[in-house]
Length: 261
Ligand SMILES: C[S@@+](CC[C@H](N)C(=O)[O-])C[C@H]1O[C@@H](n2cnc3c(N)ncnc32)[C@H](O)[C@@H]1O
Image (cartoon, rainbow, N blue to C red; front, side):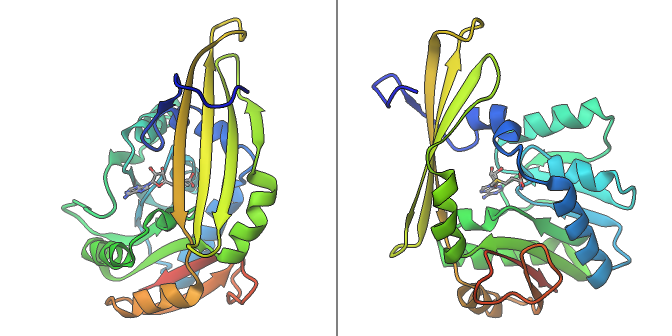
């Protein structure tokens, strides 16, 4: 791919990336991840009926959860582009999932949920610790009494390992799109940056019509930092799970799933 030049358009996050997001994530096993979230729900709040997914992206997880035929699901994301793709996918399978564009720092519902969940380190998009506290407070407002909040985050150890295989990833998606990802990690500031350079080609797949650039910065937190922030909210920690296991997180965990009540 060409290096960046003056014609590259710098875009808001998850705009053009929304078009190719599912292809970029094609290696992610969302079905297993869905089963994991379902297992957590069955363990900690088995009477669950109403579920809210935050930062649902293109809706893969919500649609997969719907296949279990156990839940009434609402799924939201701040990006209208991601939600447009999610709705398209929902329409294709005649889904009843209710997709809405919504910032998770400003939740607006006239009903409450048994479970609120959020996956794939979406919380790492919050760089300011006070925003993390605000998120918990927002979620509390939309949870039924006894309801649970589930989310994961990636650890500094994960970022140090991940750049080895994410940096310089290149892929041709289809006849219209190809992309390159540059991934870097600043261990001092604990900022993980993913730069996506997306090229749109003409129908022959030959000439590049447009090049787009999205820069995604995630703040990487340690477990003790997240625990300290949770202690400043009305939630209590039920579990901190390691990876996709129902076992406690430890110092070498790459992804930690928090279960709060
Ligand atoms: C890494 S993606 C994960 C998407 C989806 N959960 C998945 O597993 O594929 C992060 C998502 O967080 C969303 N997001 C970031 N900040 C947000 C906010 N303040 N409110 C709601 N969604 C947000 C982005 O739009 C994006 O879809």
